[in-house]
Image (cartoon, one colour):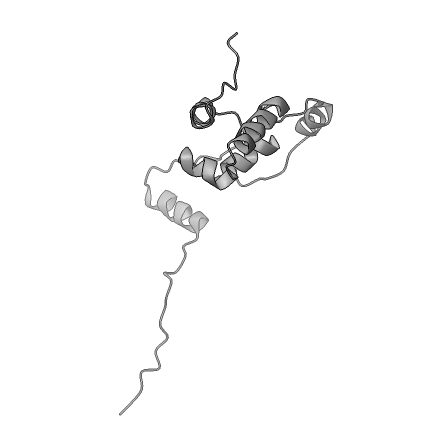
Length: 128
């Protein structure tokens, strides 16, 4: 029994694109080549974006629930002698949602606030 010692190629041989173009020109075929401007380059000329970033002074953050709303929710929940988990179960939300609203870290969601109002039997928002 003899073993097969021939090499096995896993990847096909890569071709030289310049050689392919030269061969096509020699054979008389029509060859169209395009050079893409800035292709494969990750360099930036100038620091226009950097200066814009440095000039930016606006603080970007999302609006969270007010402190008065969070204290009102907490006060009404304690008056009903409910835990955060019980209130969350009553409005079909996770306890973490109630915790976020009571700590003032939640993003205001009118649907959740309405659910809390109904469950606690209070009015949290005033009409404008």
